[in-house]
Length: 495
Figure 1 (tube, one colour):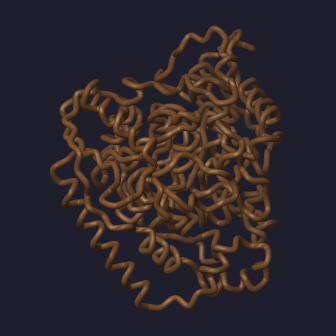
Figure 2 (cartoon, one colour; figure 1 turned 90 degrees about the horizontal axis):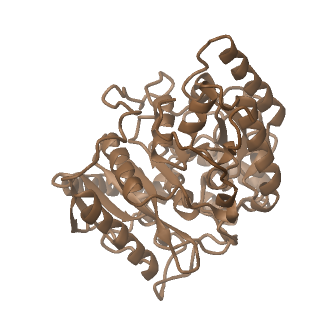
Figure 3 (tube, rainbow, N blue to C red; figure 1 turned 180 degrees about the vertical axis):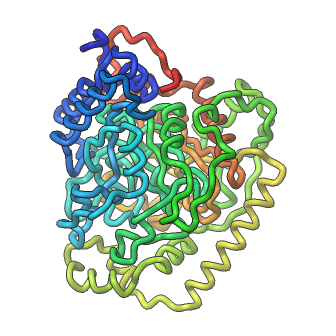
């Protein structure tokens, strides 16, 4: 390698981009290493559903040629990147985990794909999802189930299942995920990496959530976010510097001049007022998860210098509200036609929801309930800067189920384990999942960091402060850390 004995797949994206820019590694070497890692691991993990090796190598060669000419290829400078298979990619199949889209090839890139390509990223391919994103687990009817790299018998979480696994195992240093009910933060927590959901409108969406041509593929307009899955906070900030900013195709997108994304992780959060809620006011929580989250919250008080107090926002279970809003923003007419044609092959829970006789009152009740929740949250956050919770109520559970039947000895609905994440899609607040530790069985647990509306920089800064106080990037599944060879870190060096 141009840079000596360094495995590019084990480097943070910020460091890899810096090495490519300075000639210590080439984009082609980084891409070949990522493709080799995919070849080695993905037969067991099933993170990818489409690997575009030839196109990736061609793009990497373009980046190397641009650098040789003295040109700036962009802030992502040849860094390999994976794209969730619910995000449109022109000319590349986007199957969305559904038999209804098994042969779908979009005619245009999503806005975020346009932006990462323009920033110099090398797209490796598409990563596995739950069917059309209508689940937080890691399976769908048309692809092999994505496996958790810390225990192959367990779910990786979803719906950005493959994107999280790709980053957790070094198959890609960066990945795009989408989050309509926790789908960036869920797999980040289960796979032991960082996942960031910015405030609603920071990252524009199109055609996802906006294109009337594609029922199911394009839904959840007032809930959906797109965000980065990374190994470090600096990598997520780098991604946000590329992804954020308005676009006329998304009428909800907003200016982002108030955030310097690359600088956002710096500066610390000592002195901030922090609330810790172990159960949000009623979410059943696995005792081991609770203990790990409590210890992680203690880091903010003991090592970071925040004022931390236990306080619950008193939220009621938002699952019913969230699901009703999802269905309200679903093209029921179009998706019911899909269920008529493909229903025997579609996910049973999705078909059941599509065929249910939803009432106008259920939808309007959900709209009112969202208003109530939003008002409760802004009032709660008025005198605290951050809210900390467990990201999920349980560690990873066995594959091919929607959720555990019991939590802390209580019978619960299949959605109960998601009680901490979906409310933040209803409010649109920024939220991140940081690795908080491991269970006795060796499964990762996440801590969720929630900020006030538009306080994205505060969430990134708090995430970075926690990362410095309780580092996680050295933790790799599958013994991958043993492959690190004489790496002199330049993490955080501007790309």
